[in-house]
Image (cartoon, rainbow, N blue to C red):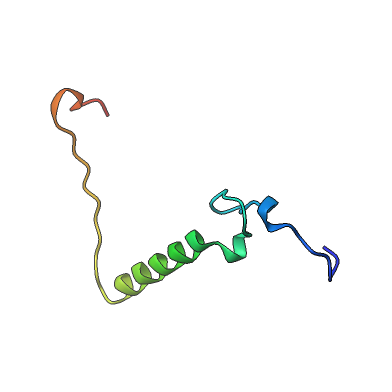
Amino acid sequence: MPKGRLIDRSEAQCYFCDDFGHFKSECPEKAKWETEKAKTKEAEAAGGHSAILATTFGPVAGAW
């Protein structure tokens, strides 16, 4: 992109969240994601463990 060229940001689409009005490098969702990713890495480095538990109840039990 040539320097000095003005861009109508209302037509710019973010490649991270697919919203209009900003670029990926300025994405607020990406910033939140990176912050959470850094917190997770710090917790794992400190010896913390994380786990995900998924369960179902009722008529859908066993549908997996």
